[in-house]
Every structure is written in C-alpha cells, then in structure tokens.
Length: 240
Image 1 (cartoon, helix red, strand yellow):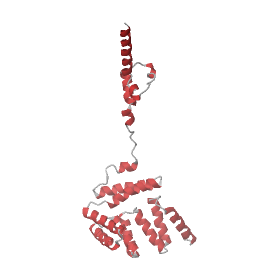
Image 2: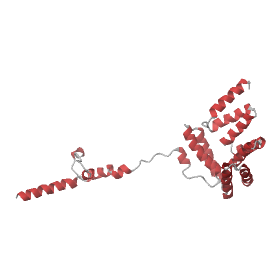
Image 3: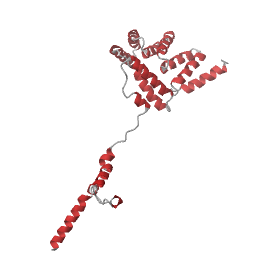
C-alpha cells in the first residue's frame, strides 16, 4: 500500500511537470498561471505568442521617403532617371539634418553617374581612377570622349570643368559648368564650382546669386552658410 502511494505521488509530480510548458525550459518555478486558469489550449497559445520565436521576430520599421523612392533602384530609361533625380532633389531641399541630406545626396550622385551606355559607364570609371591617381591628362582625354558620346551627361561636364579648373583654364571650366547646369540646373557641385570661380575673380555679385541658388537646392551643403554670409557682407558693403 505504501509503495502504491509513493508511485501515485511520483506520477502526479510528472503530470504537473509536463503540464506547465516553459517551466522546465526556464529552469525554475514558472509561478502561478495567468488569471489562475488551468493549463489548456489558451495557455499554449499565450506561450507561443510570448515564446522565443515571437521574441526573435523584428518589428518592421516604416520605410523613409528616401527608401521608398529607391526601392526599385535606378531606372535604365533616361526619362525615368530624370524623374527620380527631381524627386530626390525635392527631398534634398527639405532634409531636416546634414546627415539626412548627405544620404539623399549619395543617391542623387548615383543617378548622376548612371548611363544606359556601358561604354560611357566604363569611361567614367576609368576617368575617376585616373583622377585619383593624379593622371589629370588621361582623365581629361577620357572625359573628352564621354561628352562626345553622351553630350547630355551633366556629371561628365562637371568633372571635366574641375580638370580645366585645376589646369587654370578658367574659361573652359566656366563653359563646362554652364553646360552641366543647362542639363541639370540643380547640380549642386556645378553650382558650388561656378560660385567659387566667380568669387575668385572678384565677381561677388554673380557668386552670391549662384550661392543663393545653391541654398535652395542643398541647404545643408558643407560650408555654404558661412561662405554665403561672408560674401553677402562684402556685396552689401559695396552698396550692391
């Protein structure tokens, strides 16, 4: 009789152990059941909802406007790229912080570099490498070919303008910058380059006008506000 009682107690303990999922896994007392309910289907559902699998799921973060615009990547068609570029410029003009603006600008510059011609893409890459290797003459020759093959490539005109500027060929630099801006009036690097050349030659009125345009396009452009304020004081001091 004593043996049967011991066995009955042991069986009862085993039933309690396996009827409370999570207790054995946690290695300790599971505590009272929620709302003093008996173990059953509803408890198993609650266990699944709060178990390791549920905790491992990441909450989906809402996509930013930039992510939504770039979700399909850069279009191959030139007209669709132009639409994407203008939408990105709209985001850039309203960016809340310099970091946000920098992220948007990074995507804009990807669009600048994109071209449906693989030949042009290869030439642009080689020109960039030549410039980094301080082989300016080679970079200039490559960009000469690019603007002949793709005269609508604003970034190629902008980069060639930089090489002309380095060679102190300022007239050619201004000509290329104007060509870049005719193709893309919001090209902020071309605007900054043009303002710098005007300022260097003392044409502060024109430089200020270009900086004002740059402020509309890229308000968080590094160093813009200081350059603009200093130039504005000079212009106003001369009574212009």
